[in-house]
Image (cartoon, rainbow, N blue to C red; front, side, top):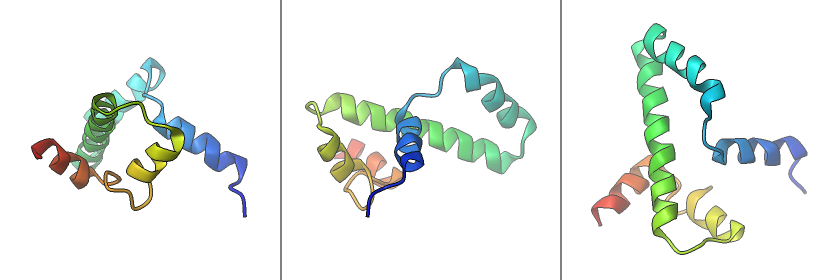
Length: 88
């Protein structure tokens, strides 16, 4: 069973860095939204940049290696695993 095309597009979007086009919406949500949404927004931002830093620190990864490490049940798929890897 193959993945539907929208799933591949969503994964590509999730891996892309948020650009200036969404900065206004993020800022509005951060300042005008609830405290809960602000914390979730900032935690996801921290996780995104933490993942980018880990990728930068590693050798060049193939798409298959990236999926094995950062997606599903991979060793660095969760926020907590990424933060613990910094302490090692």
